[in-house]
Image (cartoon, rainbow, N blue to C red):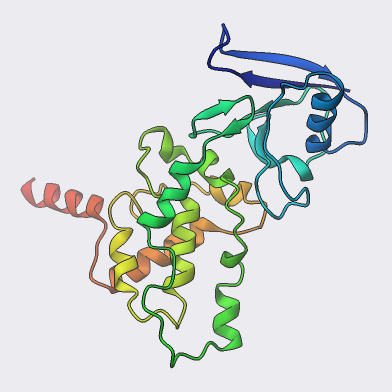
Length: 235
């Protein structure tokens, strides 16, 4: 079986090249990458961690779709590339700092802990799935908004924001709601690409819709709709 890997090195000319490798059958993509590195080319660079689809470190794109390399079985002719919208460090390894910084901007933690709050099994269940996010960057790589706006908070920051806004132990959720108004909850196109690629089955699109509802209940409005409304009145 043969697969292709798009490789990148800033000092190489050209900096990007697609190489084809013949690999043994029956391997996961991560095992195939490790086999190539051990047997064929020790300079091949990629990131991995748990090897069991828990840490999210090995996220790549295969034929234009985001995958976890440790859980994907290669097919003949597959094209493996690094995830999008992150600076490529070398080959399939990218710098994810910008995406992780969105978690700070969205305030995705308990800011004001209510010691008297009681979390019922029903309330715990409501955000159980969102808590399973492994920060693999797949949803960011699939998000079309990043093609035009690198400052967009993005899917995993917004879905984590909902996880804490819905948490009854959060005493001051308004700070989180305010943090997602600019470059956040209203900028999403609701295309659902993030939901389609999440390896954990999380639905950021649904979480963003709930955040919009919560925003309106808190006195915020879609700025795009306000512009349309003003246009209508002027007309």
